[in-house]
Image 1 (cartoon, rainbow, N blue to C red):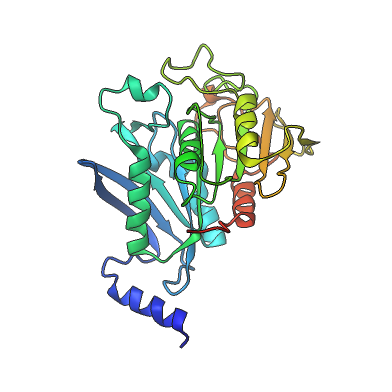
Image 2 (image 1 turned 90 degrees about the vertical axis):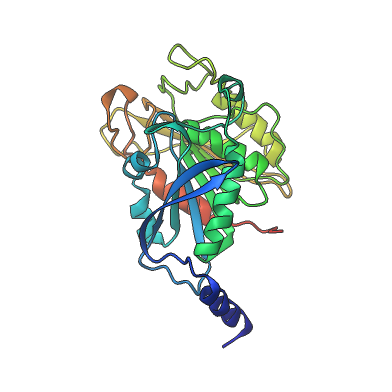
Length: 305
């Protein structure tokens, strides 16, 4: 047995709260608040092997349970062997939200520190499963996508890459400690997180940036050209949508940004059927789950501290 294997064996032996393969409902206390999250551990999990983790953040007005079904990410977890974690925001279940920055902090009387929650959750996770700390990623829908940007800005030492879906930047001056790779999905007919910025259906406290402005801000952070390589993807599904991919190439030691825009697409998760019609169409030309995991696999953290 080599030194690394011996160390992992000792760690596993000391970890009395270790989790096995399956689904787990967990909680912890952060700043006096009880917070909760779900964990899905694939059957292939081996406590002797560091395993990637994907945080999947729900949208506003939903919760972790809904997001398990809405995204279908547990199936991708089983296929690819990563641990899927679904944290819950705050509020009255199932109508939960994330403190993703902007005026949402002023809207609440006592805003939760959701960055501290995710930080503590990752600490707790490292005590219960064998985490590959170079491969901790975040994706999320809508307000959860906005929270992904905040995590990238304030926890870049722990979050290797992000993949927001239908959620743009809320914070005004993000300053991550390092460039963070981004894959972003957005429906051009999204009536809730309107691509051009807040619209008629947008709550007043969600002063989010447009997709274009979000890309411009993150291009500056990641050292990317603002002149992307644009590709129209094949229209293989007869669902009233078409997909365009824009790749923003990094210069030097920067990190890439990939944007998928869905013509005819609504406030939906690409590749998954929308649960209700009023949120708009979902494209079947691409699978967000497939593309997100392929992107994450390409972008482990190379400068772990």
